[in-house]
Image (tube, rainbow, N blue to C red; front, side, top):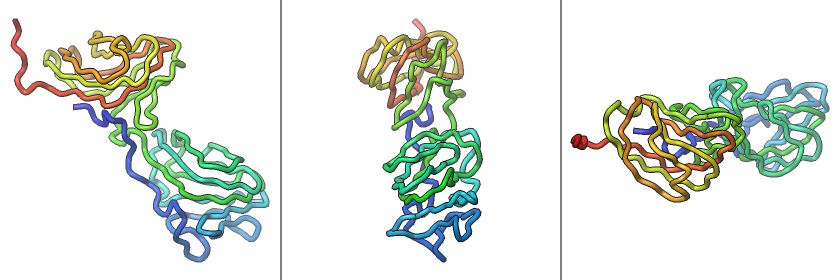
Length: 244
């Protein structure tokens, strides 16, 4: 009944992210902005080279330019090799070479790579995938979905929850399974009231029953608690247990 209980990413959104295809020295499936003789992109050894003398904001946007949803979270990965300068990727800036992986809360409906200074950089293997593609998890500020896991990082000073709505029927019995990979501090599985303390179950995969007291289900982290979770399932019994 829980959508994306394995906390997988969505499908790849970028086409030609390896920059293997160019037309007229510009990468296919990208829109190039503000290109001139001193601010340009070009093919270089199977990669995209972006050059700027800082007189114009040369940039590229992956097509379609409305592939993102403003405010949603995406995992971005890209290989960068700098000669000089700083590159801005939708508000996150880099000036060192290597594979960069980060989580982006989309500030607009497009992904943009733009010069942030005088620049000469090689760009390759751009990947953008949505976190929680079913758009079902509501995450408090200290919760995140990263690397195929649901995590609370302990930065919360009060209660913070990771919640999914319209899962259960009040009064029905459900089998719950969850894998705890790391934990510190109090974390509860709750509806309206507490079903069980997840942290005290310890590391491992656990299966137990709950009787739903709400239509939603949530993990509630107390202040400073940390936890990493995976493989969360909620299954309704085909025949409900009899009251005794």
